[in-house]
Image 1 (cartoon, rainbow, N blue to C red):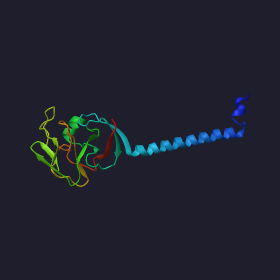
Image 2: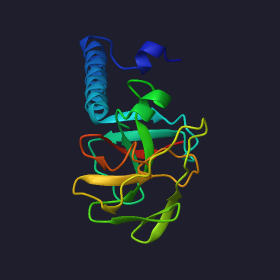
Image 3: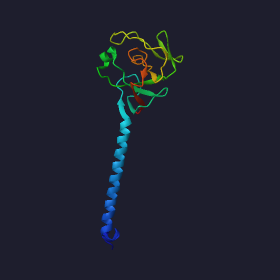
Image 4: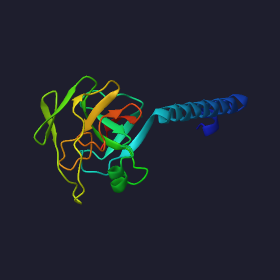
Length: 179
């Protein structure tokens, strides 16, 4: 009958060295993982969408990225008085869809807002609380800007002058829906 100590190899300095090497390797892997996560978190964040204007309520956001058509764009809504009245002095970032890119044409046909001739959203004259809404910009989307909107009837976005075109100085990044 063999004892457990005979099966595991000769006792001595090599078993202790192997344990130390394994601990050092695990420590190295742990530090490398933490550094990679730290670098990732410098350009990424988790965003929770509290509005009903998009079907998703959670996004990973890549900071600094300029959106492509149809992507979720995250931006600072600005400091317009109506925006401040509804969302506070320092409103959280908005998440909408990038419908119009630089050079695209935004137009209106009645209360419909069109990008390159395609309807993307409808205008309302008043908020749900009765405050007047000002129609947003029309014409070519300027370089470095986007037209961000959502098809939701109560969306508060570029279709209104209170938000307007969203330019690089207000862009946070691009969102990837996760929930």
